[in-house]
Image (cartoon, rainbow, N blue to C red; front, side, top):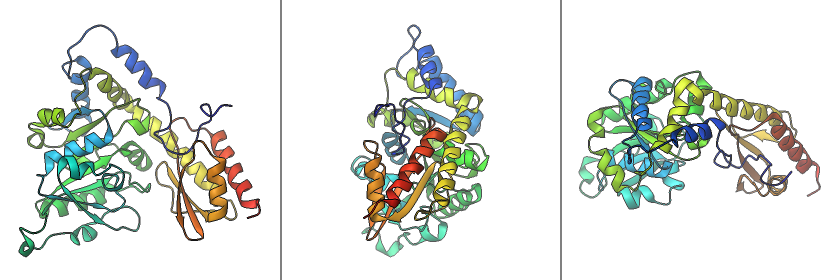
Length: 353
């Protein structure tokens, strides 16, 4: 087996495209159609967004997740304003200061125990009116669903954040890079754990759930979406051949293929979590809720395991004598891949330090 053939656990970004995405691209490749979104696939995407998120919802295909997050924040906040988010937020630690540099917003981060923000935690970053004009006023709360550490928000938790945001004249943005995994984990629809629970804007992921490329932004209120076509272009997120982005989004939404794909990656994560729980010398960093598993062990065997998984080495977080490894299951993860990883885990634990 070559390195390319070996399915790893470094990230769900590392997997190839789901066959349904490639079939959708092939179908969309027929003939000439309008450019820049003036095509049947993009029109169909708009219909599917309204079916999924409500008659007033407006969706925009985008090129990638960072661009989608930044563009949506640009629509929700002015450059001198601020966004409250967890300290683990992707927009804070994984998007190369793009929200600050391009959207011009200040990120007000909050430490959380499980990657999830609460109204009580968000309240710690509210600004005293006496500090104006010296402090950036927060106008958006942004959370990831599922979170960057694999935890998921219930509809009630999203509703509580939305109510808090609106009470303080703020908007709620959801980074839904793994929204499908969060919804599938709870047996709920995409809308129920996002816009339907009171959020105002959603970055709807597709790449981590089997797409070749492309994400989207969905607004609950058409007033908030007004002018976003221009803002999207100015954010370098308007594809000339948009039909190829929209075709993949449509394939995921039609017939709830998104759920089938996410259910599988979630189930592989649970299988992996069970195996770790049965392994002496290893433990779960936290309960498995979506498709991300955190493995905690002593640092020496943790380094050995990461080395054994090269070239698809997962992230290792070192903390003194302990190591935490992030393992991510994908749409194509198979039970034999989990068995192989568990075998390497046990081998790393029995080797002498």
